[in-house]
Length: 253
Ligand SMILES: CCCC/C=C/CC(=O)SCCNC(=O)CCNC(=O)[C@H](O)C(C)(C)COP(=O)(O)OP(=O)(O)OC[C@H]1O[C@@H](n2cnc3c(N)ncnc32)[C@H](O)[C@@H]1OP(=O)(O)O
Image (tube, rainbow, N blue to C red; front, top):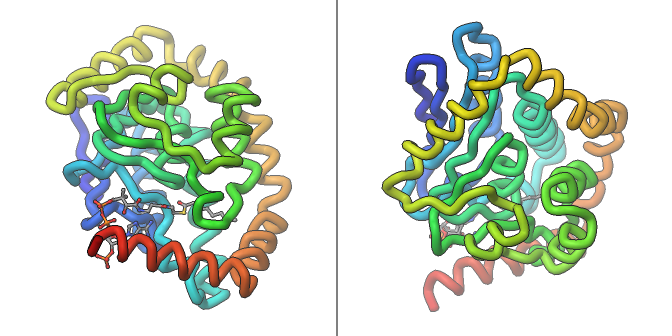
């Protein structure tokens, strides 16, 4: 993770080649970095983007969920939950500068921010069902809160990956920006949020999002149990093995 400060704005650049997949170690690093910025009194905003060309993040590392060690799988999911809690509940203003594809966990990271700008000709969405897995309730809550129930339900069922244009049309992202302008526009959007007194913006954000974060806190252990039980089922392992194979075939084909 490349993290640096530009006056009162923290910039986090995901940099885990080849596709910024989020494994246990990287999730832990991501959480430490965001918590550090959150606790830095001089930091008012965070921009999350990718240091890689063409990929914002491929989402959760599928290898963590394929033929897993159960203890590690539990730790992995705890870090996924923590990342969402940290981002969705952050007190600082957050902008996702989506400069590449953003499937599944990559989409969730961006949906957890306050504002999303995206470069053209990429795809974004919660494609979990395409892998034969099911996005947990807090993933669904986050997309529903962004694009509304009907569109979210349809997108989740299909595991639909939106083009940048489609994402803009349904409100999944806020603005389409040429790749060479994405950081400049992220700073402009951040300035708009800074024009509002921090405490008023923070309390308002809290009013909108707290109930959803509280819901996960109340069910956190059960959510981890569900995840581990679900992922370790033979049928799910088979589906995930097939999906991994299809990724490799697509590459060679
Ligand atoms: C109750 C369960 C809920 C669990 C929730 C899960 C949420 C998730 O995030 S699941 C992860 C879903 N992610 C995906 O489906 C993304 C799959 N990847 C892609 O679509 C493409 O890789 C890409 C569009 C991101 C990039 O395409 P590109 O052509 O540039 O690269 P590739 O040749 O496909 O990939 C390079 C390399 O990386 C491996 N890989 C890709 N994605 C993942 C991943 N998410 N986890 C682990 N590994 C990944 C891919 O297999 C290639 O590996 P090799 O070089 O070894 O062949």
